[in-house]
Amino acid sequence: MPNFDALATELNRLLATETHSVSRHIELEATPYTDAATYKVWRDLKHFKAESDDHARRLSQLLAEHDLSDVPGNFPQLAAFLHYVDIKTLLPLLIDEKRQQLAAYERAVSHAADEPSLQSALNDLLGENREQLDRLVAHRAALAGDAQSQPA
Image (cartoon, rainbow, N blue to C red; front, side, top):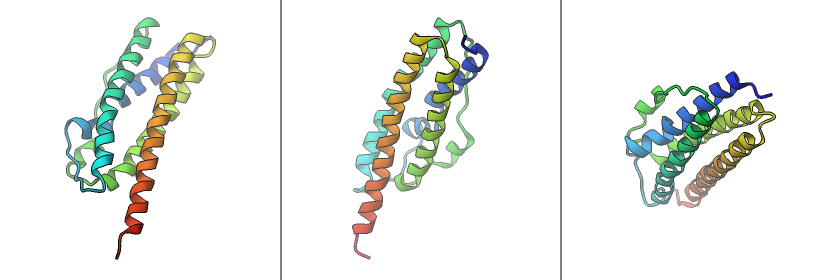
């Protein structure tokens, strides 16, 4: 039997991370500094908004389908300090945030025991967020490699 109280808590945390995350803040409010090397990364990060919108819609639907209450979230305070920060500085923060989000998805999956359709929906979201993490890590590696190949 699922632990619906714990599940509601995790789904609300996830909804907050999908709608009020650092990455969401930089997509909507902040403008990071970009240069020729980081503009491609910025373009990809802007695509995260549509993905986060879809994730938030699906999480809200799961909350409603299982009669679980939803609680609005706030932007993390860190978001206020990210205006005009460069992409290379943002990537480690985004990677850390995404890893925390994945851990919350994994907890939600475990709380949805004995509910195969709910677990399946959460596993789909977990997989999509893992792909986002892979993209962030690849961008960080590419930028680190680009910095190492630049003449001193």
